[in-house]
Every structure is written in structure tokens, then in C-alpha cells.
Image 1 (cartoon, rainbow, N blue to C red):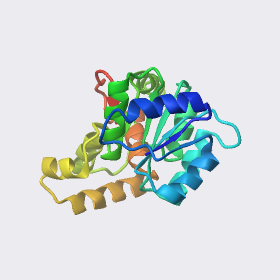
Image 2 (image 1 turned 120 degrees about the vertical axis):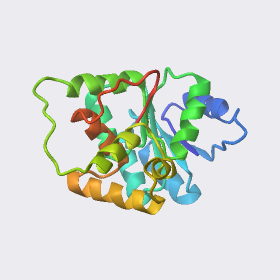
Image 3 (image 1 turned 135 degrees about the vertical axis):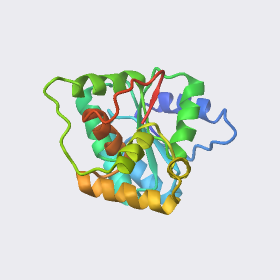
Length: 216
């Protein structure tokens, strides 16, 4: 994995913490989004841990660049900012997760591993802000021709289930899961699983409040 953090001392601190887990190897430390992109071209990491506020190229633009280079590289935003606009911009540009820097070491490592495995993790407080914003009375769920199976699949995506787990739950193949997700994204005009999960919360397909850190 790769760490992108403009404050080198902080970046080195994260590297020390993360590499305490023998299963994770940090291949480099980038100081901005441009450097992160160039390192991704060289090292092709599984995941980039991305700060937001950086000079030259911030984390929002850096996420977009990396995802344009390779959609397979996961981008996990780690920042001090829980501003709704920043969250939306990062997710829109393809971020696979959004967590805050007050996370403890154990949870950071487990979140990195979960993101690599395909889970989309959003910090509890950030998630609740999204829920509060989108649960305003004037927000009505638009009517789309979604089948019961599609709605159930969306629910499983929100709960962070992998394609394999969704397939087992719905008793279909993983290939069929991928096809259904592609169809849903096309129908709703969305780009990826993360935007689908946020859409589901926004439009009240999912009304349950998660406990602890919320996995989308």
C-alpha cells in the first residue's frame, strides 16, 4: 500500500503503525496527489491511504487521478475533515472509504484490510452526518423500477457484503451479482458501489442506523 500525506513526520508515523501488522507492506510515502499517482504507476499498490488537504494536488483530485489510472487501486481517505462537501467530493471521485484521523491503530489496520477486500467504510460520525442531511422531510425517494431482488442487493451492498457473500445470500452466481450491480448503477446513473450505498441512504432504501463504525 501507499501513504499520501504532505506532513512527512505524520506519514512516517502512520507507516510505523501500519507496518506493525506483518501482512501489510507500505511501498512509499507521497506528499501530494501527483506524487501518489506517479508512485501508483511504479508500484501498483492495492490501496492508497489518502490525506485531503495537501499542496499542489489535494486528496480529492488525487483520488480522481488514481482511479482514472486504475479503478482496481483502492483509495481510503484518512483526514481530519468531516465536511459534507469534502465527503461528497471524495466519494464522487471514487474514494472507497472515508475515515478520520482520530481512529485508533487497531481499527485503522482492520479498515485498510477490509477496504482491500472490497468493503466500503465510512466513519461513524461522517456517516451520521450523511444520514441526518438526507433524512430531511423534503427528501422523497424517487420512483425507479427496481425489483425486490435489486433492492435486497442494494441493502447488502450498504452492509459492506462482498460479491461472494451477496451471491450466497441471494442464491445466485457472483457473475450474476456483478451484472445486477452494473444494471442498477446504469439505471440510477451512478458510477460505483460507494455512490450506490450513499444513494441508498439518501433515498431511504436503508433506514437502519449502524452501530460503531459504519460499513457501507
